[in-house]
Image 1 (cartoon, rainbow over the protein chains, first blue to last red):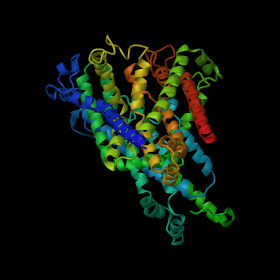
Image 2: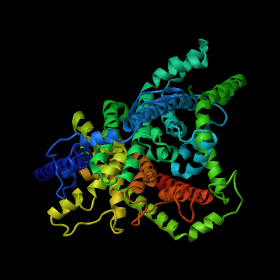
Image 3: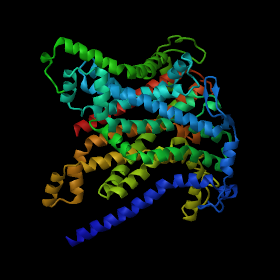
Image 4: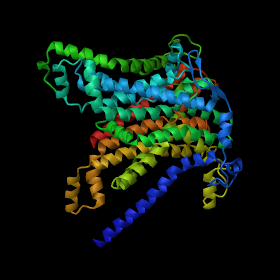
Length: 294
Length: 304
């Protein structure tokens, strides 16, 4: 008895040590980005890696912001003040992620409610189609999608990235899971009281699936922010780039200027990490709910 | 609505439900049909034609020629093989790793638990481009940390050109993919472990079962649905690693994959440049491949 408890204590200590080492290794790339962004070029090109910057410098950021300039925004005839290209990329990325998030949350919560609570012809078929489509990698439909976007004159606009994201059916699946939990009696009561469908949805259903919407919102925001592949294929001109695409392009142009690339990577990663940390609770919930009854 | 027998629902009610159901579905259907289903159908149709970049409309029907050409295409076979290797190596590794981490952290106190969960999720949030760029530096032949650390530890004598050497490149890519894949499975396993029926565990412990036995006989079967879901999402995720390959090796050093080859065929200047029919045929094969794998995983899990 004593032996086993000693052994299980030893195992616990050992597993904690391993966990901390792993955590350190998982954090290291991020640490390397952030410190690298502030390192001087001597530190960066040293063959003995410099683990703590010998001197902190803003030179990399200065270079990053110096590279290209673009108007801050363009809305029809309205053109914003000229800013560094990287800032415009950030603005584009935020716009794209927010638009994808709002559209996804609205359409998916409506659809999820209908699939969970309405009995109509073709419901099962539609739901199976949605589940199957979730497994499809986007590369498969890349070319038809591209042709479609140019036919719709959406190629090289952020909408060409936003719309396919909204069409991706994970959100519907997630919101269906959340909507299953709405008690039928409440909906029945609303109908007896003569509430319209729209009213029932907005004042009864939506408040009840709020955690689901929160989860989906943060999930879509992060995914859309990081969906490099779609951005690469759909966006062509530099003023329409997102931050990820901008950095990838810089990488292709100046693959050896690591300081510049780290500054760019930091600019791309830090905002989204902050968003993640703030809304972490919803995120965990969403991931878990998406899997229930998967 | 509580499940009612169909007969008690009046016909008017059914019609009302159907109409309102589809009205609620309309917005998502526009996006889903427009930007997922229609492209998928065009992809399948197109894979049977000789369409290229300049073709207006669908192109000429050529039957299965594209598929036969693909089978003869050595680059494609290599890409398919590499894709297969990535999936076969990374999926079990991700599952085993996240299961171990989750079982080590799920009993920790709230703050520490969420800190660990967060740290393992960070590489996903950081974004594929930022992650790739920093790993490229870490793998660098001259200024990279990997060579420095391994050399200091005496494990290697000369610097290794990690991404340029076909012996290592695919492994290096799988390692990055691994670190960006374990976040979600850990979250899922932690919650599944928390939901395991505690009375069964206690009963087994009273009967003198070891921790090991409790895990395999009680917890593991109860977590089967979670494991299945993790297998499926990790498989899909592994298929989709595109940024890593495009930014690190451009498919060189024996790291070409089907995803990258589709992109390459459609947009880069090769003898097959702009052969959309050809690229779409690859898309169809990829979709079938994934479909079969997912079906297999479901079947295996059901049998257990």
